[in-house]
Length: 383
Image 1 (cartoon, rainbow, N blue to C red):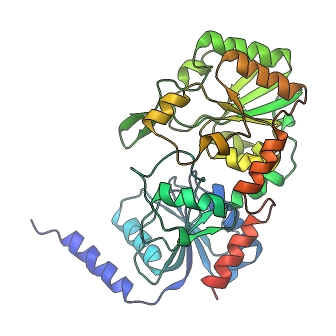
Image 2: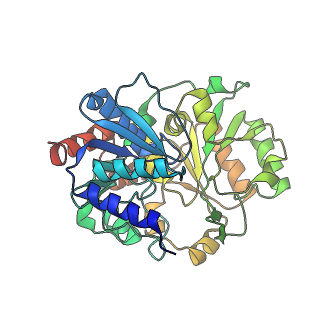
Image 3: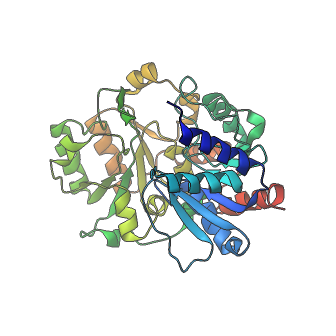
């Protein structure tokens, strides 16, 4: 049967591509209104971009923008009605600039500029199953040193990577009182951001390790760590990867280990990185948050329990012995309790190594990345 709708849409796209680009800027992030894209968006608002440009968010949830903000709109990505399809296609094909940090929105015309802000520098080896499309004009990185490994990991030309720093990292430098967000008066707060180990996406489950969260995936170990944190008056706040199933652990109802998700930040009107920057230490593993937290000059613990398994199943893009020596390696319950004790007592055992690595891995160590990115965009694309 002849597909009239498909032919009509094809003609519609062809017609739109003959028209001049308009002063539209498209934004995308995951979650909606977050991460590097949100920081760039806020900087553009501060500069009054919405007086000259229409700023349009492509969102995963049907979220309405504050109508008091002039020339800022959102388009729900998953509404498949003909009207919304035509609307999305119209704005995406007429936009002068597309700014993303998670998915790669389709580029309708070679005249458009697609600037990808990334959501983390390479640690894991993604080269066999992850590539930046060639339609991206420029992508962000944090240093010349990491541009080499980023380029290989994402299959993208090194000369199209620009080391301006991640805009979201500006939030690491904002002082806020996070202890007031919790009922107890804890002495220290450790933020735990583990990477995914069983990734659920598009109906498939990819298993990179047979544990959910290192150490505390075993109930008795979780209880032991909780007691260690309680004895030191330390709160451990865990933000699991959104694709990770941790239901077995959360059922334990531990006093000094709590779990949060993105709703925690929206509820408290703060960003993930504002919270991160004001914690006393970071627990992570093979996540690029390690790079970002180096800017905070605070202790880092690296949960290395399944390092060999993860290395076999995924592999790494960097020399782990060199790049990751700024974090205390944690293999056992005792190691984790020792790290908690170090944090509680102010013992920063790897401060010197962290500072050396920070200078190597970050071209800039300030809170001006949003400004640099928008300056770059202004100079090169929005003259």
